[in-house]
Picture 1 (tube, rainbow, N blue to C red):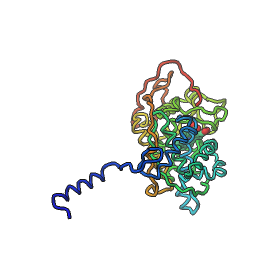
Picture 2 (cartoon, helix red, strand yellow):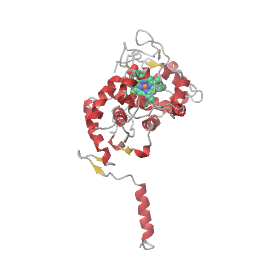
Picture 3 (cartoon, helix red, strand yellow):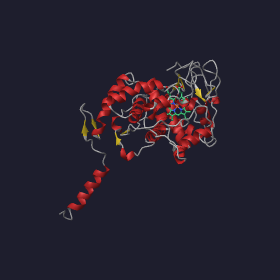
Picture 4 (tube, protein in one colour):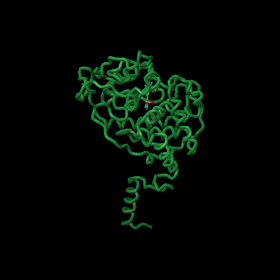
Length: 359
Ligand code: HEM
């Protein structure tokens, strides 16, 4: 029996331990510690993919494509279809890899076959589900980029899935209204669409204009900076390839590619102010991106049934520059579209207009 003097102390200790962070409980065979023993396998996956998928921890093509794959697997989730009595997709269930024979036929998934085939052997070798692997590789690949995000990772998705229906992944030719309706059906608001599109700061295209593969969406495709949000708002003046393709609009300077959807979302009254906000506050940009990608990764799943293995995801290193105008541009080249707040004032880097090398 507790005496009157001991009881408050015991309560205090109990409430302090409820507030303190979870104690690391498991030591894995490689000596790493993690909150849950079930996460140990992910340290092996991490070492393997950093070395053999991401070229020693690079923020290159495979890292970019792995981040894109997160979206294309997860967003194929439609409560509207389910309500209409049809199969609405299983969200982040790995169906894009399990049923790549079907889902690679969909126009919106163009170009993802290489990364799916590059990832698949790692998932099979380590005996983890495709859904988990896709989310893990996306989080690790993003952390390889300079100043990258710390995306949380939950493991435990089953490997059972059905092919997602076609038409659930937005296309760059879609109108803003169609894109908002589509992501809205999956549970995302207009501002959350903008937050997800932070991903396009480490992105390039290979298939919209296949004659110029590796043409990036901003001048710093290895940096998780805000340049994508700045450079999409510059007046478009040239075609990077030989002619404009469906889903492409004029870009601001040589070597840069602009998707029609990005150009429109940056200028639409429903999204333009949030777009601009991404430039003004990078810490906020990263935090909103992390929050929204976590939400994407849980589509179709109940978080409480999964295991939090976030402590396996490496912390990004590297620094990124504050937002700037590319050399040769001035504030008069910016097509500001938010009527509520002025566009952040930026300085141009010195020197003649340069062209960006492909990634
Ligand atoms: C409105 C929604 C979106 C549209 C229409 C869209 C469209 C595209 C297109 C057409 C490409 C070029 C693909 C290629 O030719 O190789 C691309 C690249 C990319 N997208 Fe998106 N995207 C959207 C949203 C997202 C989201 C939410 C993410 C991630 C969370 C994402 C991540 C990426 C990445 C990382 C790349 C670069 C891939 C690479 O460099 O190989 N996208 N996107």
